[in-house]
Image (tube, rainbow, N blue to C red; front, top):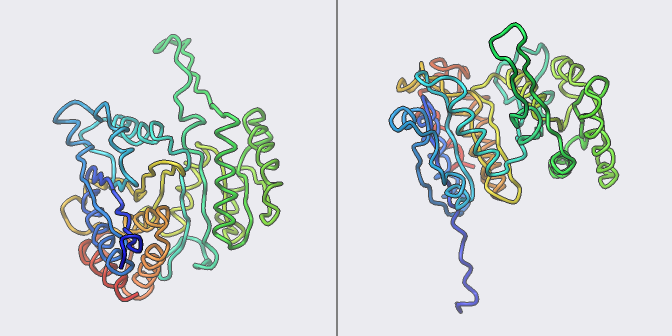
Length: 362
């Protein structure tokens, strides 16, 4: 074959941040599945480990190196285990690592699938996998999370605390446009619901609503829908089958995705992505570091494995992502006894082996 006829496969560069607690344990199982998926579908990858987390902070006093974002921009994706250390005051690691990377890397989309797998228990009576299958697109770099505001006369009876929600036309519109594109690609119910509070938060959600319906004109194949956030939470419990894709601001998205996670079986199976469509994105399980289970080999790694599937889907490796999703569904529906730590019928490492084997079987 001539040199012109040789196609050189891209090698994906993936930064691995195991993080705290059980984070490194679940990431290790995700990497098993990554290896299996690459062998089956043929893509190539290389990983680099970083020790950013609570232990490093306690050892050095630094949360992140100054050039952390620049280092991460050299990768195609970031695979994160968990952030949260029992010996570090809450907020230091979360703001110093998670929020800083999201903002510095402009990961303006938080993508949270709410999907009930077969065999997984849900607190919603008479609801099954066909009913609970939607995605929340949360704006990830604006709103109340920018830290705008301040405190006056702190610690006195006259103390004033102000927290401001920053919403820009650029930030709102690019989030909405991503949601429409995602809804079109998902190609299921073809309905996009804006979750807001236009009757009270009149300035911020007037901007969201106007941008939403203006952009909707460019997507005639998608049905635009609106629901107040309080109504959204009710329908997520009563009629989750009504939803296809939900788009919302940073704060509301933070709240409703945790409700969604509980309806899909709990934090142990919920995965998420922090997306920059034109840059590097970061993927993680939602359940946290679960320090009490560290080293016991009992934590459920399915959320981390699901996050790995999202990572591959975002990189364009759809076949590999589909194989992982199919393997998770088979494991929950036919193999595992529970999603709870220590009750799965398998150890953490055995679940990783199981999913890797199922991926290889196709």
